[in-house]
Amino acid sequence: MGLKKGTTLLDDLIDKAGGCAVIDGGFATQLESHGAAINDPLWSALCLIKDPDLIQRVHFEYLEAGADILVTSSYQATIPGFLSRGLSTEEAESLLQKSVKLAVEARDKFWDANGKVPGKSYNRALVAASIGSYGAYLADGSEYSGCYGPDVNLNKLKDFHRRRLQVLVDAGPDLLAFETIPNKLEAQACAELLEEENVQIPSWICFSSVDGENAPSGESFKECIEILNKSNKVNAVGINCAPPHFIETLIRKFKELTQKAIVVYPNSGEIWDGRAKRWLPSQCFGDDKFEIFATRWHDAGAKLIGGCCRTTPSTIRAISKVLRESS
Ligand SMILES: [Zn+2]
Image (cartoon, rainbow, N blue to C red; front, side, top):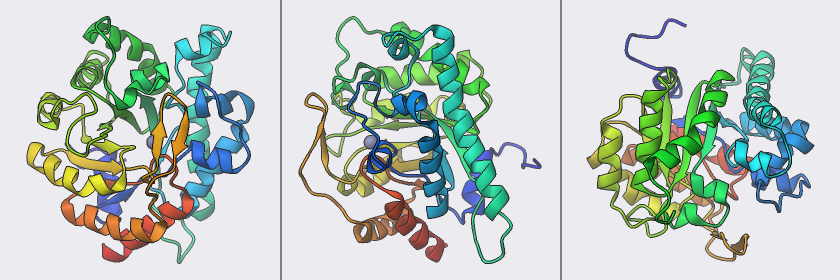
């Protein structure tokens, strides 16, 4: 692939994108808008079983909107989650592989059709395998509280993540995306696992935040980031699924805490009630707002910008447009 020594596919993409690459947007949101019913603990992972074509359609929509990175549909896809639905281990693992395969196929098809068309300025997208936090698997809202209880220690979190990580890496994504990590312990578990499994592809680790200042557990980001700074397997750190108005301050904070690339993909600003499993009406930011935000986040030093829950291809189109103009 002719990469410079010491640089990764991710660095290369950020370069090609003019200094800031665009991540895709909300996945479940888009599945729902096409009529998928995902009121289920497995959430969008259910679509891997029921409607894989729809997953590819959503990947395509984000590529058309200008996403440089596709995040796979494996956020809440876990082996124990599938087992609890009566699937076998083999079936569960094959669904995890499928989440990567669907994204890679969509990327390849899109690139074949659009990559070399004059006048279209797409980058060849990368596929990031999504690894949701332990709280996302519990589906009890703990990815936003960071409270895993006294029975959950470092080894338990590593054991929870290990097999899924192995299966996803073997399926051949370009990178790994750890998402909505709510506390220091799980960040440490993810970083140690990357070492123990000797993962060779780049990865990012993103935290959620509910107060705009700390990790959801109340631990400072300083404590959380210090742990990740020690690992050269973690290429980028940041925030996902927090409201947009927290992000600029958090980017500036992270800039002081780390040399690693900073990645942000907030939600639309609406608030998810993890226990009631519904969106509470709250301040929702439109695409025009996202254009202004994305410029500010770029100026503040973010290298990867996208959207999480309730953002859509039109949000990503707006972000992509404004970042392309400024690069
Ligand atoms: Zn989200």
